Image (tube, rainbow, N blue to C red; front, side, top):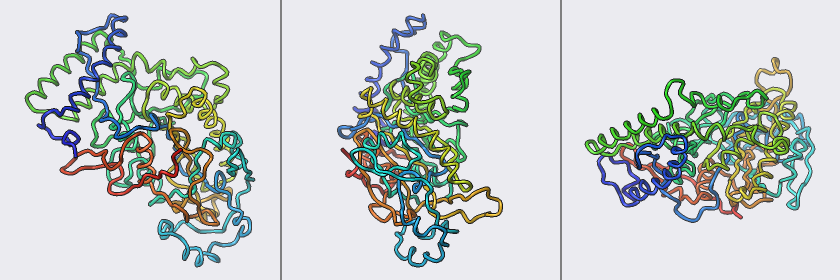
Length: 492
């Protein structure tokens, strides 16, 4: 393993690290002209830019990732995984078929304890679409129109059926321990293309999740790899102020010139400290975050100002919450943000599953299809990997908990087998990978776990998940731990 990947407080600067740091100085030359226009140019070379990534291990297929996270878990049997067998066994208690079912289930489905109540057919019709003939629910007519761009994975699995833990596993690979997120690892590997914006942005209505900011945390990776959580509630409003999207974007008391002087002083003190005490990745990352925050004052407002988009483009995405988030995701990727996570909550349909899926799919269908179409028209889809995946799926049975208090039939959590899709970024569109059982409860053909998904995402970004490591607490860590396999069948 290369020594420079292992954080050592007093290790000498390696050749690669020296090139990375000095190479980043060229980015500040472009920034210099911007500062000069505003009369803010400091002494030459004083603008400190956070360290870039270590570089790809091989040729990348994708440069950016947009992860659309279905918070709560979408029902696979109501969206992308039709199950005629459910119609045949509709309303039959699961206990009648449980013995035979469990005997044939893979390990991923055993012991989950979430299959209760009666088997429930989907009330939504499925039809084949595109040249690929992939079946899609009537709830997603716009996505059906772009189905040939999608690789639909019907065999995703999770190891946990508790929301918070499963979300952390999907994002960090571990449901309990504090680990860096897949976005942070991606940024650590490839760095940022735009020093005026965060390399990793997470868009969530509340700016955080029930399991906290750990879903986009850098944990022990350098601070500059951390995701920036942004509260987007109200983004669909016509009175929305992009300047308020990021809290404290501008100082209310200190001018840009004075901020620049303060940062230059801080950087000077930091260099003196490093000469005496040795390099410190935490302090390096924090200084880098300060610099990014300073530069964001000049570019972030423009990037988040959706009113700059033509009316036709806004109409394409729609003016719903999801429409605005998807449009914003495209603007961020277009400006060089490496990893964008876009959270769509409300999918925890224990109650009134059918009516709520009508609403949720209507919210997401047009914007997601527009995102794919827009990226393709701009020649960005080939460089941008889109991942649609939540923490798990829903059961093919009714949720048998607290039935008396429910307004309508719902579906429980299901980690044994669910559906995700990938698009763009080197993925083979118009294909289906894996399969679930006849009822859609567990993966029976080519099951994937989160480590496989993470290994595949990193591979598409040109990163070897086994080589992308970081030394912490005396040992080397990686996103996939000791697991994970690259699913090359998904590649174009």
